[in-house]
Image (cartoon, rainbow, N blue to C red; front, side, top):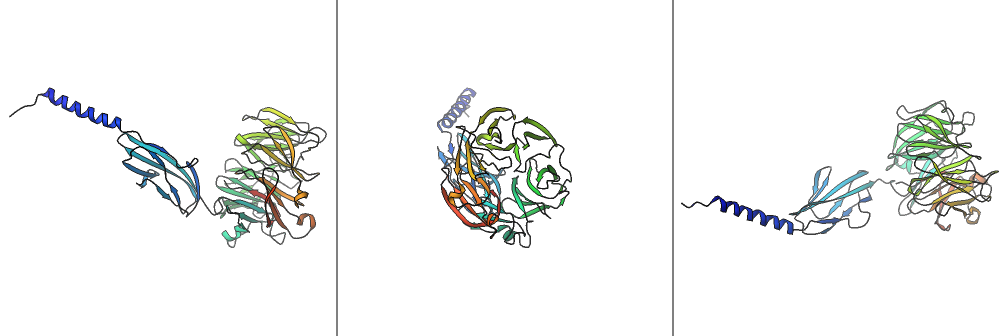
Length: 436
């Protein structure tokens, strides 16, 4: 019997290991990329197919798709289709001898009303009945009173002013009640909850930064101010927050998880339920808006002084100020709006009815749309579509003429030209929302 010397066995094993190592080094690592730019964050309607087809460079031995750590497929591509709205995270893995490479997909499955445009109507055709919500889908099709279709036998309270979005929910405020706030699912518009206990009437605008405590301002001028809303106990306080009586009756702005608003000539912040004065100006604060890059601008009315725009940094410190020509007055209780994704801020000069805009990049103001030139007689809402910068204006001529309470919606491109018009899109439309 022959024995092989230990020295030769060791050498043989070394050769085998060296050869295997060389083969592994020769095998290129797989490179993965999304098929298109932006495929890392996708959206698709529920029950619709979305083909995920990652680009791969290098030899691949095995494929694997994972969701919540569990394998859902082992193919090079995957057909995504979900029946429930929500955000889904899928991990694609490709493996060869050199190792495993991963690619992440974040997909938002949208409900029927998770995209397009929502239009809040103040009332129904009677002028005193339930508020309504219309929807313009991604194909441009208008559907009236979709809330009633989704919630048979239920209704929103009349005198609706605000459709506020926070954490996958809409909060519809009503000045008359009995449901002062109605909470809706933001994908299906199904009614989830109501706040019917309130110590004050005339709820107008609402905001929350944590989903637990909210704040509402009111049309009740005998008891003006900002009122705490307990969303857990579903009740609105009977007394306003001390020092908030001068807060303007305009949409409530949130910055860095806190509420910042104009209160007469002061800019105030709500800090731990107390009003803190940040700045005092010579004129009334006309509004607070956010533009591209989460940049905050405070707008100050021009009455005896020039109107101006004041830029704040992330710590709410004033870092820039621009005065406008005396042509612009910027009404103290006007509605300012911005897309949040570009450099424009829009408002209406109420004395002339002209819609104007301020370019925060060039620091110049200009007249944008003269409503009378396009047939708008009484604008009741205007908002900017964050996806494309188009300005939507709701015209409610019945408020001016005393005729039917229909509202028309005009869409303007960024040059101020009418791109599209919807006739009879709602009843005295008070808010326009672009689902995210």
